[in-house]
Length: 407
Image (cartoon, rainbow, N blue to C red; front, side, top):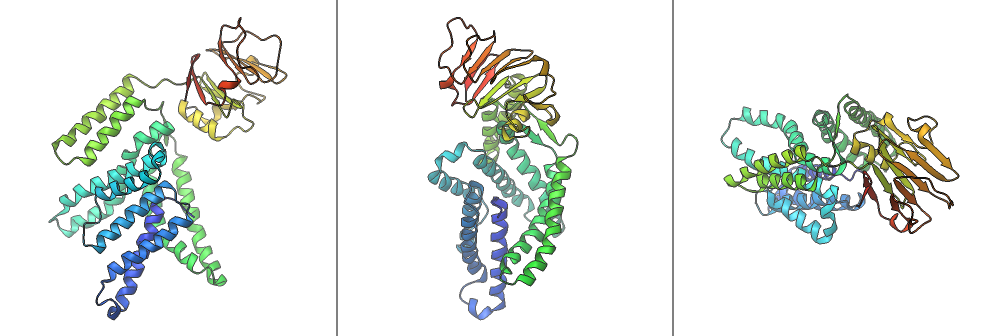
C-alpha cells in the first residue's frame, strides 16, 4: 500500500468523483443536499481509512489534512485551494509531531505543495477572462509545469539532505504520473473492491501487472540515462537558509517585497559557489562498527556488503561512482598494497592520513594520524595523533583532514 501523499489525494479524488456520480443517479435523494457536498463528506471518511492502513506517515498526513480542508471548503462554499490549506496542515502536523520539522519528509512534502499552490493561485488570476483554448492548453501544460515547480521547490532540500540532484525527474513524471493517475490507481481501487470474487480479481491482476511493470521500467530507463544525477557537496547552513527563506518570500508574500526572495536565493547560490561545504575524509557510524574513508576519488568501507545504505550516502556525498566504492576486505582495490591486517586490527595508509583501527588489544601500536579504538577509553601519553576511543564511538563522527566534528 503506497504511502505517498499523491496516492492518498488520488484515492480521495476518485472517491469524491464516484460519490458525486452516484448522487447524480438518484436526484430525489439529493434534492436538499447537493451531490458534491455528500461526496465531500464520504471522501473524507474514505481517505481517513486509507490513511490508517497506509501507516500514517508525514506526507500522507499532510495530504489528508489538505484534502480534508479542500472538501470542507466545498461544504461551506469557499475557495478550496489556497496557502491557508498548507498552513493548516503544517500547524496540525507540528502540533502532533513537532520533531518532524527537521525531517526531510516534512520539508520536501511542504516545499513541493507550497510552491505548487503559490504558483496556481497566481496563475488563476492570469487565466481569468481567457478563452477556452488557452485554458485547455494550460491544462495540458500543467503536468509539465507542476513537475518543474515541484522539482525547483524541492531541489535545495534534496541537495542539503541527499547531496545530489536528479535531472530527468520531469521527463519521467510526464509519463509516470498520467499512467499512475488515470490507469493504475483507478484499477487498483477496483482491484481491492473485487477481492471477494477470485475470478474477476485474477483477471484484473493480469491487466494491472503490465502497467506496473511499464511504470517501473520507465523509472529505471530515466534513472539510467547518462548524467541523470548530479552529485553535490551539500549546502552549508548559510546557503540553505538563504535559499529557503528566499523561496518563502516568493511564495508567501503578495506585495513587491516578495521579489526580495529572488535576491536571497541568488545570495544563497553565490555563497554555495564561493564557500563550498567541506567534504569529510573519514566517516564513523553504528558505534564504530562501520568505518568509511575517501582516497583519490575512491570510497572504502569496513562493511561486509559492498552496496549498503551508508555506502550509498557517503558515496553520493562525495560524488563517487558505484564502481569506485570498495570494501576493505575485497581482494582487489587501489589501497590493497597500503593495507596491513594484524589479527582483528587494521592499518591503512592513504594519501592524506594513516588510519589505525584497533579491535583487540595490542602492546605495540604503529604510528598513525588517526587511531580508532573499540577497547580503550584514553590514548597513550606518547601518541601524538587524533584518538577516538570507545566512549566516543556511539556518536556518528565526520573527520575533516584530522579534525573531528560530532554530528
